[in-house]
Length: 385
Image (spheres, helix red, strand yellow):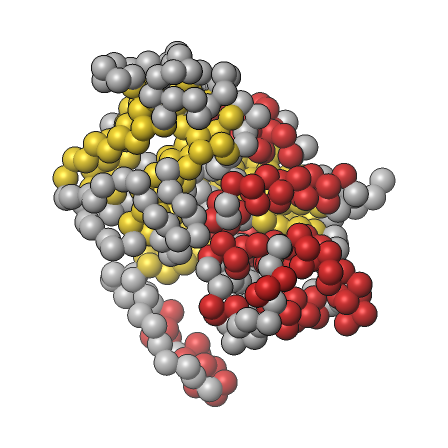
């Protein structure tokens, strides 16, 4: 029996909350600092925060492993550790293969270099020869559909262009392990479908995929196993259908309306999402819309602070998990929602008649500080048809 390609044993990651940033020290300064008894004592306002604690699981060669959980569950921290961007505070990780990662927009790209130069640089980081990279070069460029911008410095790329090129490089330079975070949500709908198809192809060819997503249907379609993280620990690991259903609580979606108390509402100190519902022209909650009627999607939220780059919207998912409508454009972020104000806001977006085919749809809220962080990147919450 072959060894697992990834073994994670008792991994934890600790951060010190309230610690001050110190100047860079020489080796002699660092040694003197750690030999001093005073350095063993934490300040009163410093607290330990464990982003991950006692995480253990293994991944077999050729498996597509989904990693799911709420915002702050530790998913991205785990992927950064696996990609050797940050070390674990405890535990052991064994990786038996070359790793290609796509975690955050622009990670691993040098902003002053052109797209062409970054392709070769990324390949060299993965340990590939120039000849190997050149052999895949045309395929990478064709997949990214960015021939016109290859000799432009990537600092001038939009977030969508970054993702196109970064995913194409990560997927085509043949790492044994492909690590993908939810960064694909930045790309346009057609490119998301293209990426999911490529990840499925990678897995079918015997390479290993680790995929973090809030799209439960994509996890079910793509992955052979799934890990659920909750507050930094593994609470489920097994069949994607069972794990995603457990995470979502049954089928995971409410018919027509979803509500949350303020205490448990998704979000952060900027904004809390309180409800999502689909209503008809009369303002009544509805789950069955004739093809010649408008569909109104309403979101209610408690806004605590206003940010110029705050983007509020949702994705509409077809019954196979593909995105068929989004309430904002990902590259230029032109939103159809009105401006927010401090306090309770109820926003409504209309999907006009004739746009949707007959079938089942689900609404997945998307709220972010543009190109900085997700505030709410939720699984589908409301279903209608």
